[in-house]
Length: 407
Image 1 (cartoon, one colour):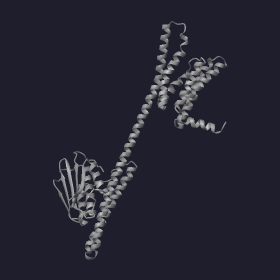
Image 2 (cartoon, helix red, strand yellow; image 1 turned 120 degrees about the vertical axis):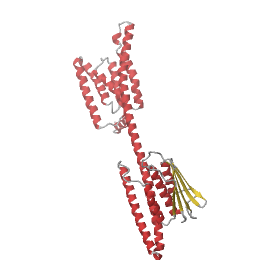
Image 3 (cartoon, helix red, strand yellow; image 1 turned 90 degrees about the horizontal axis):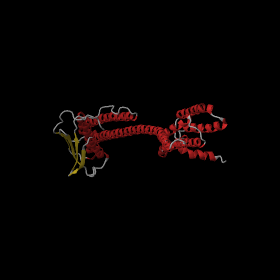
Image 4 (cartoon, one colour; image 1 turned 45 degrees about the vertical axis):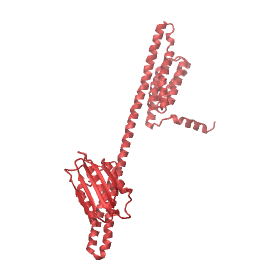
């Protein structure tokens, strides 16, 4: 025989084998050996002659093999059980304790088998009940027809009930296991979605912090360079602003990186305070220090404390919008308007555009980020040129009692 022949057999049988742990395989092996020994002790003392011993031994071996392989390979176990049962009936052997292995095999076909094996086990319950009824029909010869039919029906339904009960228990077990797997997969998907959402929030915050801070630093550096010779004190003030802005940006970046590291290890995602309306004055001061004529109008003012999510969205949208004025503005005045109404807040940023300023189609990551900020709290944002100015308008709903922090 070619040395590759056993290997081909193994490869052909591989799809029929389920992956099981070594512990499960050890348990099944020990259970099969104990079942084999117990079945032999039940019968061999009552057998007459070596022929009965050999035939009964073959049946017990087949049933024990079916029991032992029921979890690792339900199709092989079902086939082996059918071979053992047919051999038992063909040789005229009486029902024996080893036949209880059939119940375990039917359970395994429903619990662990593929779709084909699952339904093969279901069909086997009906065919097995018919086979048992026919096999036990011999003692009914010589009785009246009515009694024979009645006994046959009782045998059929009793066998069908026992076999179907085993298969149904396996089907219920299968449903429980699959339901648990679905819940685990759902929780994993929700965790991945939450992680991606958190990373997106951190990426937006990182963009806002770095872009705004660098815009201020660049504006101050340019001013310091021009004023260095004529006004040393102005240059000193510009360098001081650069130092303060850089330190604040470094602190914010460290905080965001800490949040990212904690979210990767499944820890609390909120490890520090988020910007709020109280931080807007500092933001305005940074922009004015960069040489921007910033005019802010708040009418009406907020009543009470707005939801944290809205405060954060307003801050980030203003931060990005004012950063864009430093990059693309014409150096003229910048008007900011805030209207805190009972059910919403209106936000507007208006500034002039340089000839080489931002495109009129509203492209760029900054505008996309501002729109995302507004959409995260259920609002909307529009940005477009109007005459010689560029206007950003946002409307953010205010939901009472909503104090969550959302990126």
